[in-house]
Image (cartoon, rainbow, N blue to C red; front, side, top):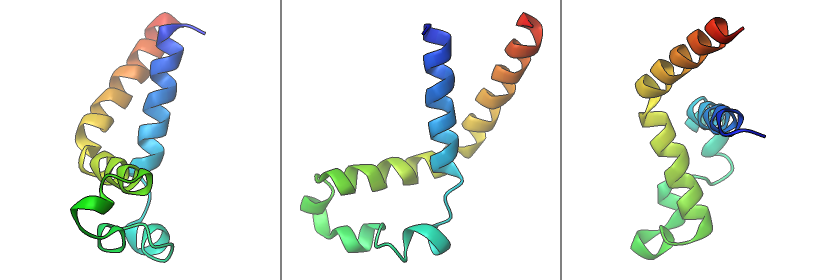
Length: 78
């Protein structure tokens, strides 16, 4: 496995986090910041994962640009 394949895998995971719907998926399962509770809850594993999901959702524009660059590189290298 090369570095390029690893980076593509990370991009796919970031895309998966970015498309999760808060109302339909995260809130019913208790995966939001209000259920984590305070500053100490953000240091737990669940709090860190919730923070990662919310960060990926805020970074949708850079993810779109990275997806476009990845697609162009795949077309050129093929």
